[in-house]
Length: 202
Image (cartoon, rainbow, N blue to C red; front, side):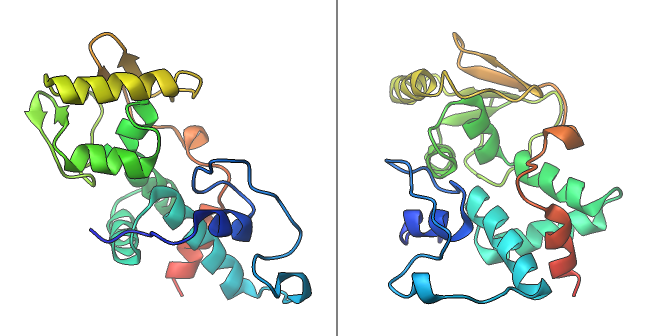
């Protein structure tokens, strides 16, 4: 699966937020990155604002444009508020749930963890990162020494990262239960998803 492999700090600076984990805190500046950044003064129109919000959300979850657009189209076909349904679908991807549980340091690492066959859902091996979990599903690490050692190390690193209220994690068994789907208040509030919906509805 193709993924973004370019300079991550540049993307963080472009949008003014840590979409990619950085080895050190990136410097927030009032101008864009690049040698001409200081002299770059362009007011964004509505299209540009919507595009930025879409890109921030896409980079945050590490999806290709095709994957992101397909997920949006599926969300649009479901009943409910499209923006909230869309964010819920992104949050309940298996790779994101693994990241939220603390079994991986980043969403990129979580995707690789799933791809390599380390994860079980309701006792069955699942190696598809975009598999959508449902309320009541039990997500756990396989009974394999290498899998459990890696997950344990990652849990220790993520102990200060809060676990969302809609997931219960059992550190001893390296399992987590999706108690329910996330509420609207628990979805990412740093990105204006309504602008994303309007961008794709043009």
